[in-house]
Image 1 (cartoon, rainbow, N blue to C red):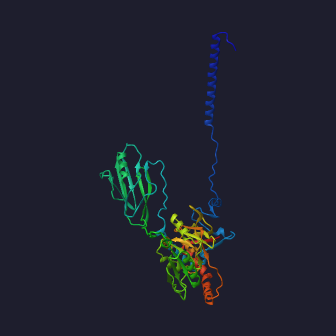
Image 2 (image 1 turned 90 degrees about the vertical axis):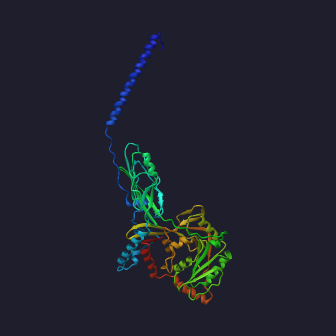
Image 3 (image 1 turned 30 degrees about the horizontal axis):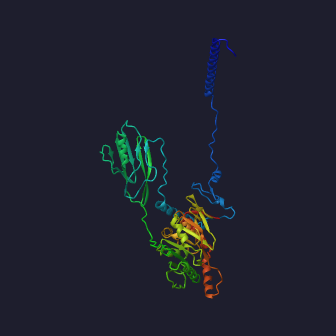
Amino acid sequence: MMWKTRNDLLKFLGKFILLGFMLNFIFREAWIYLRKRKTHEPHPVVHINMNMLSAEESDNFFLYDGISLFQNKSCSCQNMKNIKGMTVYHLQENFSPNEIKSVKERRKMELNHFQSRYATQNQRTLLAVPNSPLSYPIYGVEVMPLHTILLPGLKIHRPDDEMYEVTLRASLGTLNTFAAVSQTVVQGRGEKELMISTLKVAFLNYILQHITYTSSTFQMQALDIVTFELGSHAVQFPVVIRQPTIAKLYDPGADRKISSMVTITTKTFLRYHKLRILIKSIRQYYPDITIIVADDSNPPEKLEEPNVEQYFMPYGKGWFAGRNLAVSQVTTKYFLWIDDDFIFNEKTKIEKLVDVLEKTNLDVVAGTVDGNFFSFRLLLEEGDEDGDCLHWRSGSYHQLEGFPNCVVTGGVVNFFLAHTEKVRNVGFDPKYNRVAHTEFFIDGLGTLLVGSCNDVSVGHQKKDKPSDPKVANLEKIYDTFRRETQDQVQSKLALLYFKNHLKCFTRR
């Protein structure tokens, strides 16, 4: 398009600009109208599903090897009895109807006493307060009985615009401050309740920075909940009162020889012929290591061997009684437990097992017997007043970090290295006087961390029929003690019910 004059061009541009303003106004008004209309339109109704998953659906979320490990204190073994390969023991059935009521009453009384002494003190749940002007510690405050500590992290976040009154309250200890201030500012020094009043936030925080807590009772372990209040704001935080365990150290010697760190322990009964083969094989690889033998044979035979300690017991006293006796005499950091019919070979490297316990937090670590790896898991479900549920499953929990040939598990074979003091804390119940193995690891559940390695092995002596009639007769007598009667099995299951507060035990 061509314009004849400059005025024509200016007129065209003016009309174009005017048209732009008009279009902008129209679109703007239309947008405002649509926005208002949308704002006033009713929101669509949204139906919120607030139903809970069924018990079966929720259980499937937390299955471990077919066991629901969601902690709701309502375990049951009933739904496992039809699973192929599963053995289920309802332990109450090992008592007669006439005695079960009395047994339950005694068990409940003993459980209450046990829980009052050993149940964890840190069971109270503390919830964080939203939008609080208070800073305070939430974890890690610990004091020894009758000792004093500074309470860390106490502070308020407010401007200087009013009189502030702060209250601190304890139940198992007393409160004070290192700040040198008058009684008009701090009241209740050395009492369970401490009150601070001041206009200056900086001054208040200075006092709070130097608040002390003194444990006023001597307890091995307890939990105090301290309350921290400012006006309508109140928070709580835990103070753990704990007496540290005094160290009990074993000197490994300057050379750290295996014989200075490990004692070999075993229990024998009527099998001196096998015991002597075991000792001979040990001496081939560890000539000066101490061997402790607990012996309830009859007639007893004295072992005339260097570095062998033999302790005699009443005839047939029992398997776990012998274990207790042997371990009680250990004076080294570790002991190696073996059966009296094992045999050492070139794969029996005690040093490897020592290395595992020295470099991890395991308490017990096992090897294999004739290359056969054996371990099992113990899974405890909390139950109601009728008892808990315990499940035995073969296998392990997971690999042991740093040791590719080792796993973390719940129980192992009778060839293991253990921390002497830790096992003594669990002990071997002498009531198990015949066949018993899993029972030791059940008693140690929650105390012993157990592992197993497949690169250390001990041999098992061949079970050839003895040619010596005397030895053959002893083996025959031994076998009668080795086999459990139905009454003895029932007695073991009844012990699990009462002593370990279990209502059922499953095994697969």
